Image 1 (tube, rainbow, N blue to C red):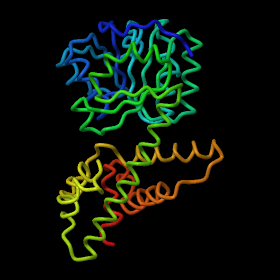
Image 2 (cartoon, one colour):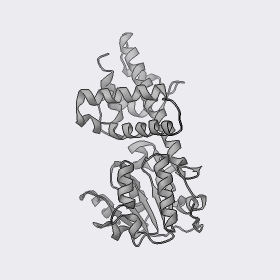
Image 3 (cartoon, rainbow, N blue to C red):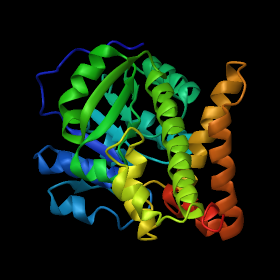
Image 4 (cartoon, rainbow, N blue to C red):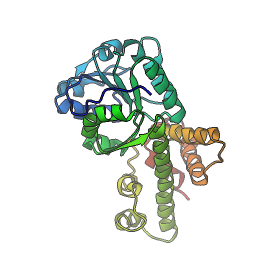
Length: 303
């Protein structure tokens, strides 16, 4: 793993942020608001205006964003998107200055993270896998949990910037370990959501208003992030994506692939949640993939 000189006290590096989706744009806004030199890029146009208003420089060309930056943050889609942007023609690796650090917030699985780390190490730079949890609310409020795998010295170098975007920063170990912990998180998220919806279903079947589950049980032993944050959205039938079914199914696919790579069997609760998400998509069509994960409620609504 590439060793990068520690600069934990240095907080004036030139930054680039690639990917202006729901999460990326919110996270990048904290860097811009803190007054850091920040270049931003997105594959499709029209998503950088809010960052420019905060002082960031929008770049139409990826090379322009990366070539003068020592720290590059990326928040993209799946592993194919990440590899295309980082390793593809005219990608980050072609323009990256030696000694730079790339921090990827996407969920791409441990194997892809390790492969990327090897490629960047060979180029004289460093790659950190740093998936996040906390949803769109955490991204807007700067309270995300950021789980980092890779070189510990590089982690200390980027810590001051991560602290602007996240409240809990965890160095998990070697490359891929941040991804591994994120997959554990996604199992918790998906199975907790199943528990919430089964509790609401039970309430209906026993003649209770399902709102009582959300309003009365959040501070009890059965409380969870899903109950406190997604429960109110479900009651309002607000299925707008803070985190989409599309992305959750991708993450749970990575869980299955990681288990297969290790020769392990499936996880029953996780498998059940995949079936419920797929039921929503089967009944609602392709557009349902872009609903928030709380739309799993639709699979239970008439039960």
